[in-house]
Image 1 (spheres, one colour):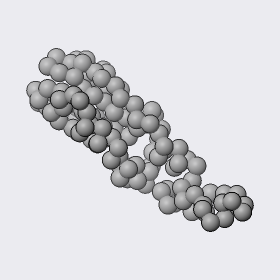
Image 2 (spheres, one colour):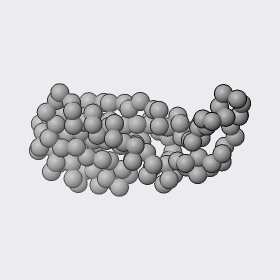
Image 3 (spheres, helix red, strand yellow):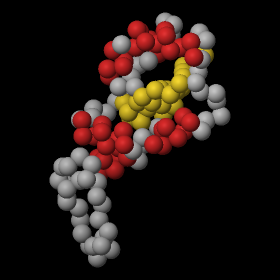
Length: 130
């Protein structure tokens, strides 16, 4: 079978029970899609930062990234429908992390923030400085 997520080929046992229902994703993609998000709360002067990540430190290729970002509706819904008063919701990638010390002082003035990323970045060392 060919995985609809990553495009790699994978073997799947076919028997009478699974003859008419076959998995469309490979075992790795199924594990990625079923991952539960991890939410951390980091305090800083002027507010709190909720940091939601989907994967701990899994290396992803571009195809995996684009597919998982499309499936990140669950994270966005949890940020919008939280009981906390969140001012700003941002999606975080490597590019934003590189320039984090430049833009974070400007955006922290809004108060409580919610950052969403696929892979966990060490934000503690950046946030604690501010």
